[in-house]
Length: 350
Image (tube, rainbow, N blue to C red; front, side):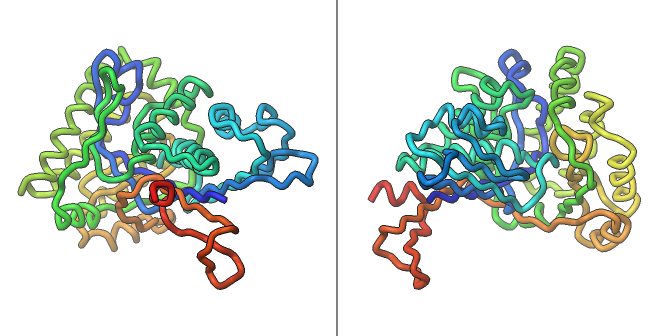
């Protein structure tokens, strides 16, 4: 059995410039981080005693005779790319709900690909993992998605991801001192609006309006280096929050579907309670709202937004990880089951 753990992400700046329709002509960049909220996918060979060859468990349970019969689009597409001779059982769990702006769909695809390769005993690099996930979502499934979520989920960490050129993307860790990174983390709050939405319609609207929104997208891309400079200098970190506020105003102008009365209400209440800035994560329309505020204002903001779930989080840097479990391994866990709890890549290179 393979179990993968793949993080969700928070994107601070540059969202929208990661659409291929934009960056192949103009270039693009995002500043984002993975967080310690994950999706978990277990994958094992399905015993041959059953009539069906595939059992897929997520918000529903699917039983299928062939991979082509699987209804879940990402599972069906991934099985088409990473074929297995035997049947499979695939089970999905997550720390946070799907369709909430944290890149959960891409984390699912990345985690599933990692699991399918791992079950075959094949290690896949993080670069290849993200490239394949981008290909599956954009070209095989045909979703209206950008290219940042797959990269963030596969690699993990606090990064600038640049788009364009021959290799489509490059990823650079932002060399922030630990103390400065913790300071940023201490200024952030995450609230769930209670609205779960499909982002495809909103993303498609943004892609359709790329030429109309060229000025805003260019400015949003420039905010990436400006934000990184704030973090890497002795500048007051409140300036990061002020830049988030300017970015949010630009993001709302991309499409009327990005915000609504609920999201605007959350944001305005937070500002009135002392927040400096923030943004709705992902495509918009619902999901999670990120708030930036000095720590002394956090109790008042939580009180002002007491109707909404506040989700504590921390940054993480591991990206998608695979754990290999084998009943034939010599290491026993004391419960009659033998297991490894090491990264798959470590085991394969012994």
